[in-house]
Length: 100
Image 1 (cartoon, rainbow, N blue to C red):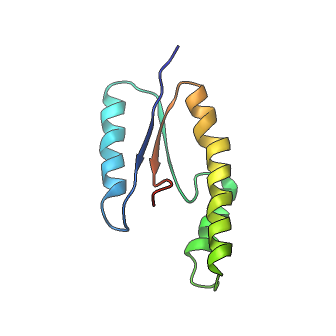
Image 2: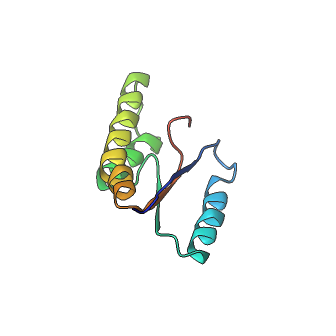
Image 3: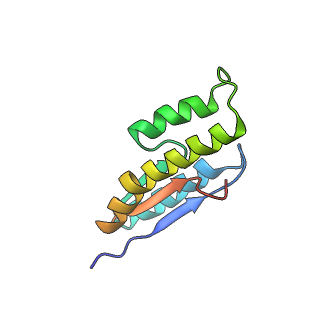
């Protein structure tokens, strides 16, 4: 049985999340560990569309709408990226998760 892990780095914009995930990715690559890198919001086809809406200044979203879009992205991300890869024994590196 392959052991897989779910690594998440959370933080404010510009805090170095992507840089640190790159270092973890290099470390895993050097050791031959199978992994994927992903992000929230985004990480799936639908998630990327939701991300575009969420970060766009074009829309004036109500706070509840924004919350629901983030929730929709999280469901898509977990069910299509995170859980299936962990089940296959593939470690998942994620730029942001629930605490962000």
